[in-house]
Length: 147
Image 1: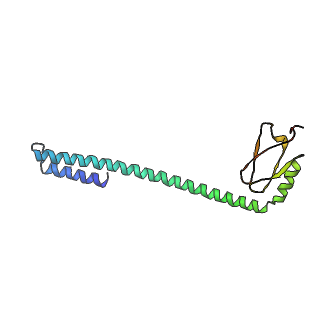
Image 2: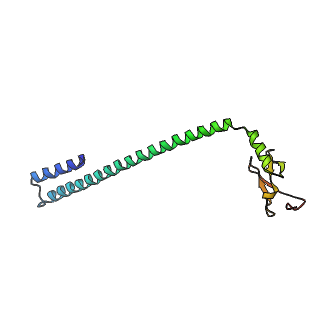
Image 3: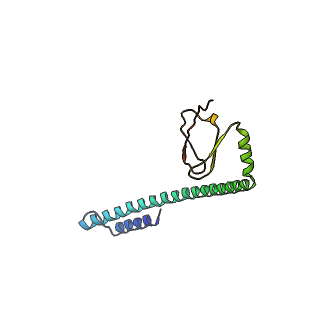
């Protein structure tokens, strides 16, 4: 029982000890006030219990989030280490070797060289997207790509 409930019980006992009954208007009023205080104290006790439960759940979520942050930053550091070890020139050589026939052109917006394989493009594809800046580049061919 919480502190407020104890105080409400004390007031109830005090009123009974003073023999405050429901015989008079004042007695009815005091008993009603004491009953209301008792109910308010019980509600506050319930809210305190709910708040403590919520705090425990929040602590669990906070700990889980902390674990996720640690795992994320550890993975991010591992990826940075891998990126430092990786040579972009090797990727470009592997990329060029994979395609038998490729086309390349310069992006009109950012100037990056865009490579594409015509075998991967359908006749109804009208544009490709620059991987560097995201600009849509319209494709115009003088011949059928299947030829």
